[in-house]
Every structure is written in structure tokens, then in C-alpha cells.
Length: 380
Image 1 (tube, rainbow, N blue to C red):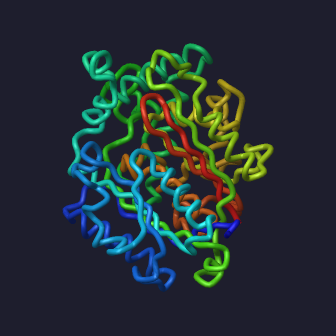
Image 2: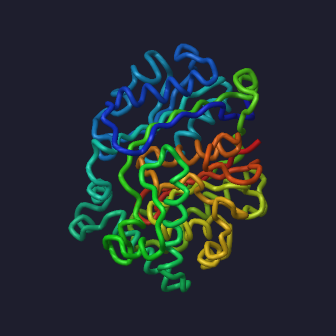
């Protein structure tokens, strides 16, 4: 049994709509990922993919549709639907059993061929009660944002600063979809959405294909001289009905506690060097930072005021631009992990943080107001 699992290679596609077809985009990231370590598809042990039937994929039988362009035929494989960080854990566990010495992870989302995100998320709701109300991920987030501001005194301006930071960081990221140099006023005066949210505080609908190769300790050392090790993981799912939940005390706390315990992390604010979190709505980066233990409840507004989460700050959060800059719905969690991998290896290009990164956190979320959360810790 392999007790250690490493990420040895990643590849990703850009977020803007592409005229290239699904097959070509999936093939390119797979080929690039394998070429970086000198492997072919014949060398693969197992494959775990993250893709969505119908809603965010636009196709049925998603795990069969792209097979010949990625994992090849006659390979042991599985598919995960929803939050792609789950695919990472499934792949890691397959290696830890000792049955395989490598695993290809794939996350696939061609956003340009999908309906609008909230056209899809409307279908997440109960068909008898929620859909007739028009409850979507965005309207749920609006309730959550209003409750957050009212309880802790966090301001609209502090929430908007997240969008200013992340869309500014995205100017340095060639894979980003939405980017720009904005002011707080620009963010708050952008087109109104579900109050108090405005358009530039909401993630776009993006493309996103991500390939990642995992390997056992023995195999990893043969494939690369810079393996990045899996340290910890946690996930947790909250109850389905929105009204039955405390929107400001989510299961991210549970998922993070599991990941920290596994990784041996006692003080995440000091021990995490960089965090890539999934923030489909700007204010959620603040709330998630609190839930991750980076500050006390209600304290993230002051944290962003101080510049703590800037790319040059003490704890950079989303130096890539995060999901506000690039939102391939199914792929976004694994993309956060890929960005953490690049930061640790010093290969993030212009959005590389200004300090040595030994430990990175990746976070993914799915469902109304953060119903489901996953957290992964990786490091050297």
C-alpha cells in the first residue's frame, strides 16, 4: 500500500469561449499533462473524471462521450459529478490501496455550450416548492450575503474589494476568463443582479478542462524531481433545504477541520502559505476565509482592508483570480488544486506569489449557499 500520493503534472485550458470542440479541448490537456512527464495513455493505471450530464455538460453519458480522446479504451475508470475535488480524493484513494501506481484526473466543462449557470441551478431546487419561487444559486447567495452583512457589520465595500482584488490578479493569469482593473465603485455600480449582489460580484460562465496526474511515492520520484504531496483532505455535505440551515455556519468548518487534522495543521493562518478558494460570489471569499479559520467570524472584512489576502500579503487568497475570474462550473475545484500545485512549484508565472510556498490549500463548493464543501491540502 502506498501511503504517500503526489501530484506530478497538471494542464489546463483557458476560460473564454472557444470555437474548438469538446474533443479537441479534452485531448489537449490530457496530452500536455502526460507529455510533461514522458507518459502515454498506455501507461495509465486508472482514470477518474469529473464531468456533468446534461446540466453543466450539455451531453448525456458524460463519462463515455470523451473517452477515446482522454483516458483511452480498456482502462479502469470512474466518473464523479458535482464538485471536482471529490475526483482528486477518489484518485488518491485508488493509489493508496496499492492497486495502481498512477491515476489521471480529468475535469471537463465546456461552458459555452451550456445554459446560463442559474438556468441549471434552478433545477437543483425542490420541484414543488423551490423552483416556483425561482430559487437559484444566485438568489440563495443573495440571502446569505445579506445575512452576513447584517450579523457581522461587513460592508458592501469590503465585499466589493474581493472582486477588485481577484479580477486584478486575473490580469496576470493567461487562463482567466474575466479580468480587469476595477475600483470598488465600478464593482458596486455594475449591473444589478439579486440584491445586494451586482454583476461583477458574480462568477461568469466559463470553459474549463483540467488534467492532473497523481502517482505513488515510488512512481512519482521516477516521473519528476518536484513532486507535490497530498497532505490532507476533508469534505462535508449540509442538509438539502435552504431554510433548515444556518447560512453563516456551513459545513466548510467540518471539511476544513478534517483536512487540517490529516495534514497536521494546528494554525491554518500561519501554516497555509497560499489558498485557492471557490468563491462564485465575492462576499463568499470573506465568509469562507472565516470558516477556514484564517480569522474570527466577522473578521474577514478587516483582513481584506489590511491587504492580508493580496498576492503580496501575508496569506494570499486566489492569486489566480479565483472563480470570479474563471468559472468552469464542474472543473473549478480541481482547477484550484492545479493552481496550488503551480504555486508550490514556483510555476505560476506572473501570478506567482512573492514568497516561498510550502503548503497550499484548495477548496471547492457546490450547491445553494455552500451546501457541499471539499478542502485539500498539498505541500512539499
